Image (cartoon, rainbow, N blue to C red):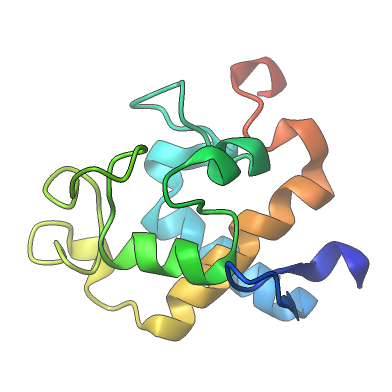
Length: 133
């Protein structure tokens, strides 16, 4: 259960996901995001992965469920300075990125839960890059 508990919001509240929710989140993530983020890496920018440290250093920090959901709705650059919805799939750009069209807030919450649980389960392999594949 400890592995399935992650930070829910910037204030530090915790939320636990069931194994079924994590599996559902993984399935949605793999079909919607896995093409570019397989294994928690970012194929288009190897400097920015989905590992906990990288997520925590973004502006604003993306190391909690609420912040990741916000990002999936309207993504910004790593420094938070500008929107990247024209080049990164999101709900805001679902007219261009059709895989995002059918996702709702619960789907985004499940994906965020999976992204945050994966490094606890997979360790360094999540976001570790091609040396683990």
